[in-house]
Structures are given as C-alpha cells and as structure tokens.
Amino acid sequence: MNTYDWLRNLPLPDADTSCKIIEISFNKGTRKDFFRNTTLHLFEKGDLVSVEGVSGFDVGEVSLTGEIVRLQMKKRNAREDNPEMKKILRIASDRDIDLMRQNKAREPEAVIRSRAIARRLNLDMKISQVEMQADGRKATFFYIADGRVDFRELIKVYASEFKVKVEMRQIGARQEAGKVGGIGSCGRELCCSTWLTDFKSVNTAAARYQNLSINQAKLSGQCGRLKCCLNYELDTYLDALQHFPDNCDTIQVAKGNAFLIKKDIFKNLMWYTLPDSTKQYPLTIERVKKIKSLNHQGVIPEELEAVEVTSSKPKEVEPEFVDVVGQITLRSLEKADKKKRQQQQQNRGQGQRPQQPQQRKHGSGGGQQQRQGGGQGQQNRQGQQPNKGQQQQPNPNRNQPNRNPKGPGQQGK
Image 1 (tube, rainbow, N blue to C red):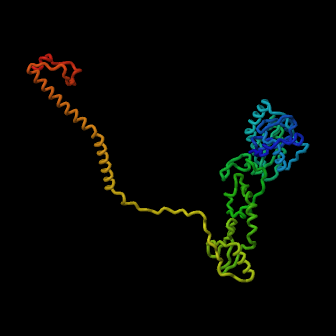
Image 2 (image 1 turned 135 degrees about the horizontal axis):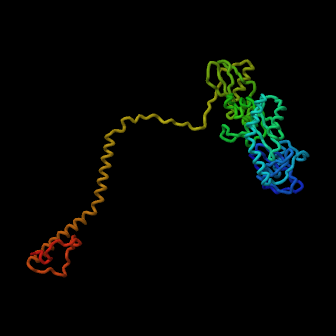
Image 3 (image 1 turned 180 degrees about the vertical axis):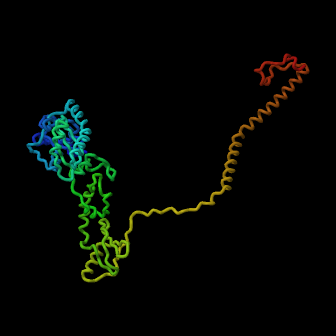
C-alpha cells in the first residue's frame, strides 16, 4: 500500500530546490527503494521505469514523487546527498517489460528448487521467497533462520543451478507475513503487508498494561509473534496510569488482605478481591489512597466501601414466556370459516341483483309478443292478411332453413 501524497496539490517549488528523488516499488510493493532522477522526464505515480541494478537493470513502479519523498527519506534515515544512491535510467520499454515478465515467471519454480537444495545440504533454514531481477542476472533469496547459517556452499550451488548472481537476505517472521499477506482478526488486511515498515518488539507487558488476558492464541498474529497492534494504544494507557497510585497491589481491611485485579482507566476505578471470595469490589482512586495511608499508620479500616458501577446502556428486557395452549380452539376457526362463507354469498347476491329487472322486462315483452303472435294467428285463421306496416316479432330461427314444406300462407290452414 502506497503512502498518500497529501502535498500533491501544493505549488511546486523552484527547480533548483525541488526534490530529485523518486520512490520506486518492486515486486508488487513488497520492496521499496529511493532512486535519483537524473533524466529530464517528469514521472507520475504508476509509471514503469528502468533503474540501475546489480550488473544490469531492474524495472519498478513509481510510488511517490515530489516533496513527500523527503519526508519518507527522513523516516527511513536516508540521505538525499548520498553518492551511492542509484539512478533512474529511462522509461521502461516494451522489451524491458517482456523480459521482466519472463524472469518473474521463474520465481515459483526457483523457490521449490532452492528449498530442496537447502534440505539436501542439511541447513536449518527456510527459503521464504525468491525475487528475480528484471534482466535475470541477479536473484535475491529471502530466508528465515533462528540462528546463524553457513551458506557459503549453498551460494555456490545456487549460482551454478540458476546461472545468476546470488544474494542471501535474512528476514524475520513478521517480514515473511508481510510478504505473504492475509486478513487479520480485525477483518482488515495485515498492517505489515500494507503500511507498517518498522517492526518494534512486542512483549506481554503491553498486554498487562491494557488489562488483556495473557492468552497466547488470541494475542498472536499470523506470524506466530505477538500482534503489532498491541503497541498502538500502549502510550495512551501509560499516560492514563500515571494518575493511579503505586504500590497498591494489596491493601488491608478487617476481612483480610485485598488484592488488586485490574485498573480501569476509563472510569478511574481499581478492582480488588477479598480472600475466600470471588466477588470483585470497585474502589475509587481516593479511597485506595486513603486505605493505604491508614495502613501505613497501623489502622485497618472495617470495609472497602466499594462504589456501585452503573452502565449507561439500556438494559434489554427479555420477553416473558406466555402459554398459549387452549386459547385457539376449533370452534373459533369454524366461526371464522362460517363468517367468510356468508360474506362470499352476500357478495354474489349483490352482483346478480342488477340483472333481475332486465330479465323480467324481457320476459314480459316476450309474453306480449307471444300474445300478439297468437292474435295474428287467429286473424290468419279467419283469412285476414297481416298488416304489412305492423312490426313483426323477430324469429330466433330465422337464420335456419325452413323445414315446413308448406308456405307461410298455408301455416294457418
């Protein structure tokens, strides 16, 4: 993870006083170094450049430029006027990038073969990573060992096996975890693989000052060492503990000696326990100082006078158990079903009511027409012709063929 350039938007200084040093990262940011820019190019973050290497060149990515580089150099105790500082050659060409990719593809196989060679020579070491130079003329072997290792014979075998110039570099377990990477117990990416560069020693005293239980499994990181984050808030705890009295691990009361369990810097309380009891008693700092002064005078107080600790969080009310057996019966379900059926019948009856008057109207009209038809039939029987102007009732079977062989005039006869 690269450093954020918060000086980028500031106006540029003079050309003579501007920083000519550029930070270059290699191998996906696992290794960073400073190089002098002797060219006339203005490099930006993310550019691939070719820099000086061991008897050749190497290809890296620009990670920082400008005035922020001076702050990083001061942090790493690097001098800007160092004559041995290597230089930037040019912008990486396509040939340089292709050559770098070919040599980087050799690294996984080189790790396996180098481990087999070290085991064959019976060396107490572990090859963690192999980093090839972009031109393939040099290889850096990172190894882990508890003590000193005589690898003079190993270097000769590596040089003849890989046909490169060999450099052995010893790293610790924390550096190895940073190169491998991973997710910590906090859910974020490991600090050693993102932004942490200085690995300070961590001991169990840091956990004791912060009132943490000495559990090796919980306090250890993926590297097998104590977590680096134990040192992050240690200074805050040390400053807060200055207000607490010293030499108050045990105080005397009428019930016996009270032993100090922990110190709460947030509530300024000191927790004690009495013999033959597992209960913890919180005491204020003033009360502890007073009991300690009385003990020096030879006076033993009757009680500790513990304070009540109230929590600001609202208490969660647990739901009570309710017995609902017998409250729901089959009769209630039958009543609900019966009521539902009645509503459906009412809805159906309301939907058919508007059609009943129309049916009655059509029925009465049909009766009149039948009566008129009967009268016409009587007139036809008497030999009278029907009136042409009179509207005849439409016959529903008019579209069907007339099956009566007799004509319409012969129907009444």
